[in-house]
Each structure stands twice: as C-alpha cells, then as structure tokens.
Image (cartoon, rainbow, N blue to C red):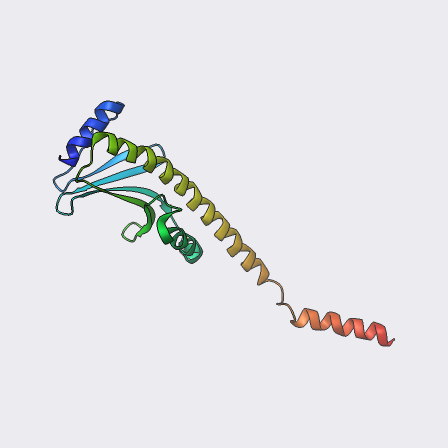
Length: 167
C-alpha cells in the first residue's frame, strides 16, 4: 500500500490536518515544540520520520555530541531511532525509519504514538545537555581566573607557611 495513503488514514482517524506531501514524498508537520518531517521514500521502500530537537552552540558541541553518540550505541536508549546532526541546519534530529512493506494504518499509528513522545523526551534531554555543557564551560572559564593547582599561589602559600614555621 502507498504510505501516503496510510498518512491520509492516520490524519482522518485522529482528526489531524492532512499531511501535504510534495512531489518528492516529503512533508513538514507542525508540532507543539517543533516540526515533524516525513519522507516517503518509494525507491528505498521506507518512511523516515524526523523530529528537530534543537540547535547546539559551537562551544558545547563536542560535549553534547559525545553524549548523543553514546546514546545511539545499540539504539536501546533511542527506542530504535537515531540521533543525528542535520549539518545543513546545524540542528540535532531524532530519526526513525519504518519499512513501508506491510505497514498498516494501525502500525503507522503505533509508530507515531512511540515516536512523538520519544522525540519530545530527547528534545528536552538535548536542552539539558546544552545547559550542562554551557555551565561546565562557564566553570572552566572561571577556573582560568585562578592559578592552576600547584601554581604560583600554592607555592606562595607554602613559602608563607615555611616562613611562619621558621620564625
């Protein structure tokens, strides 16, 4: 069955606005906290659901991306989906690929019921990771204002203590 027809059934069953697919089988569907992108790839025989999770500032990307890559391992933490970077937009996304062969309206509905809350949970988690990384970056910047351990301040304190002892 044509996957686009399944989306028509899903929107009718749930009272959702129609999915307006373009000639390439893609559409963007507004969500409360972002946009759901749907791509029906006939040649590949699949449907790709993609939710935008947010942008990550350059100065904290390494920290955030490392956590997301770890979450991708084995896909258990992502409920079978993938966390990725849309380089063109500079945004973290959550993707889930459904095989179109044998997909039913009920199966598509179940996939949506699982995908949307998982994407929202990851959106919130990405926001927390960005905040944590920014806080760590700020702490690192604050640490630069003081001499490192074993630096001049420690030596001065040790010298002062030795002077007190020798007096």
